[in-house]
Length: 220
Image 1 (spheres, rainbow, N blue to C red):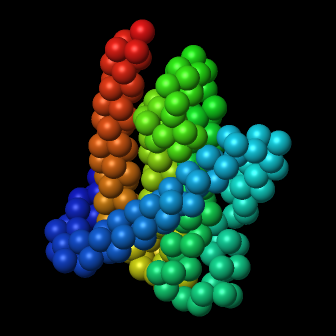
Image 2: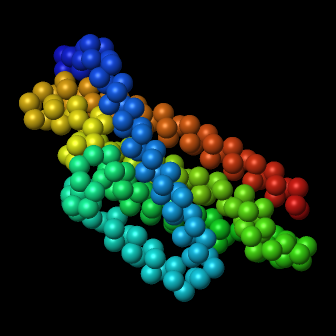
Image 3: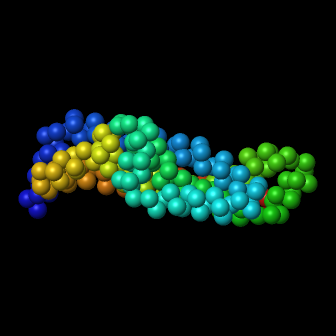
């Protein structure tokens, strides 16, 4: 209990520093996930068009996911050096798997009758994709985005090892000095950030699922 009180004391005393580290944490996490979405969604769309390559792509992405975080950061650091870029590139790799898997699953499970109806109305592949498939698959896609974001927030705590800062910097200082209060002072904001982001994205996911249900009712 004393350690927890000391941790909150550090957070209050070094509030400006904690805020700076939190903003760095948010910047790296969200940048990595956003880039992964921009890369992963087109890959998943490609997989739905060329299904014979889908398993190969998922296996490659899955293999990357098994590389330990520290090892991946050090490999990427060889090419990009110390700093934000190395951390963000690593986060892109770690975020790809849930984004690609969920987007592919969502697009693959769109009701075939709706696709046939759209085709019968003369819709092109692009129109079907953006007006039928993606809107209906969005709740499943959103679940992948949410999982990727939570993973990214967790992995970002080790970005300090490549000089990128974030809340992991406070945690590492605590570990280096065997100061449990400092470890908690970095861990508590990181945990709260993950919980808050998860709650917000879950609400968006539920809202998207509700809108999807309404669209199905209208089309039936």
